[in-house]
Length: 159
Image 1 (cartoon, helix red, strand yellow):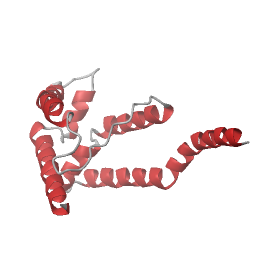
Image 2 (cartoon, rainbow, N blue to C red):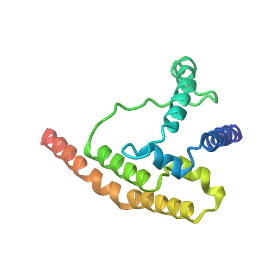
Image 3 (spheres, rainbow, N blue to C red):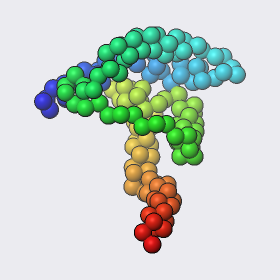
Image 4 (cartoon, one colour):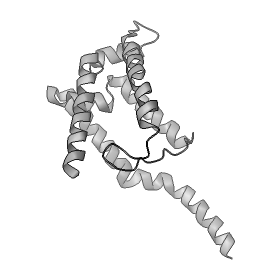
C-alpha cells in the first residue's frame, strides 16, 4: 500500500510539474508580467488558470467530492470552514509580496529545481528557512494568545 501511495504521489507530482512547465507558469518573467496590472500586463496565465479550472471542476464535482475515501482507500479529510483572521491575511500578504517580487511561488520553484539556477536555489533555501522559522517559533507565538483565552474559559467553568 505504501508503494502505491508513493507511486501515486510521484505520478501526481510529475503531472503537476509537467503542466507547470508546458504552460509557462514556471517562467518568472511571465508571472511578473501577469501580476503587472498597471504596466505591460500579460493575461496568458489567466487563460492557463481558467483552462485548468475547466478540466478540474467537472472531475472534482463528479468524481472526488462525492467520495468518502480516496482511490487508495484512505479517508478524505473534511476541509475546515474558512476563517478570515489576521494570521490568514498576514500570511497571504507575505506570500503575495514574495510572489510579486520574484515571480515565483512554491510550486513552480520546485519545478525549477532541475534548472540549477542560483536564484531558484536561493528562493527555495529562503522558503525552507521561512517554513522552519514559522514551525520552530513563530507558530507558537501566534497560537499562544488563543490558547490562553481557551484556558481562561476552561478555568472559569471549573471554578
